[in-house]
Image (cartoon, rainbow, N blue to C red; front, top):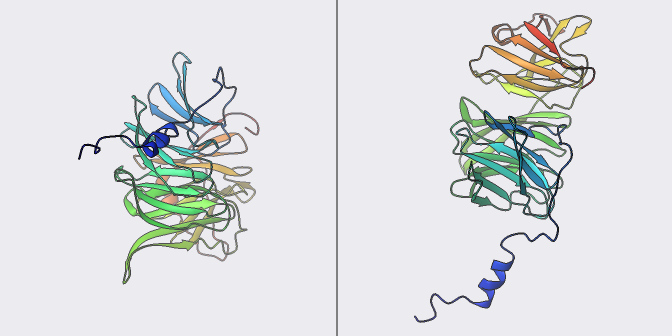
Length: 316
């Protein structure tokens, strides 16, 4: 009884390695990893968060002040995401069996730690609309998709996402029992399904049909579970279930973008889609026209013009 509260040598040894130890200090970090998908995220009206090397940087857009949080697992920052309440943010790291850390905001204190989600690196993480679930995807060699109860630091479901690099995963806004993932040469549609052996994560790979197989980087889910994605050729692809319902371009000789589409975003009021591509343009597209787009011939291409566009620069 007298030794119950006494620290053992094992406890003291574990405490030494609880926090990372740095023999140098960061003076300044030059540049941002802006080419990485989902790596610049606003956490409030005056601050955005970005992962750079082995740091997470919180940048004040009003005065330029930068606050730096160092990575904890030694390999760098894999992915970041913001909780819907904006009271928390997640840092999913790189390294040997890297961890996922949930930080409070604006306190920037670690509240939760999730372990054994991937072997080497996380490439994407996201909350569902309610904020009670977190999904993560790992890189080579496991490419593991994991759905977490982050408040309990517990795995709900997991499955291998694909056999090559996965860029992104999201929950459907209107139904967090459905998810979408995309990456090198694929898009995949997931359901959390009840089976005879319990709850399972079941995925259906998107079938490109007559459209050339492409890397998929940007997509947005419609309320009725259709998905609008970009592709490397510059066309927009409207998916229904796991098939392409229509390919969308501006005309026969003008694709939606001239070059790969990296961003596809649906405004929260479902008024329009916003896309951005390698051609340096941001374009706005009418939601209703895309939602009801259809064709009746062997070449499922639907033509429409954007409702607005903005040229950011050449090949940006």
